[in-house]
Image (cartoon, rainbow, N blue to C red; front, side):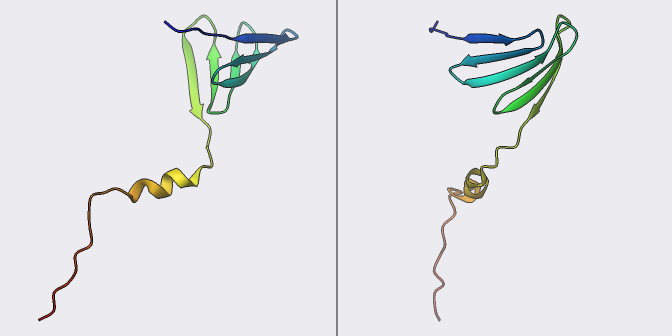
Length: 82
C-alpha cells in the first residue's frame, strides 16, 4: 500500500474542490445528485444508490492518433528490374 494524500475544500453547501496526485476536480451537488468534473471525464451520480454515468472529455491531443500507424512491422521492398 502506498501513501495517499487528498485535500478537500468545501465552498458552501454545493461546491467541493478535491486535490490529489492525479489533479484537481470540482464537484457540484448535494445528497440527491452530484456532478464531478476533472481533466479526463465528467461524472454524474446519485449518491448512495451506486448509480453513476461517466463521459470522457476530448483531449485534443492529435499526436497520439497520428502515430498509431507507426510500428506496424511492414517494410518497403525494392522492385527488381528485368
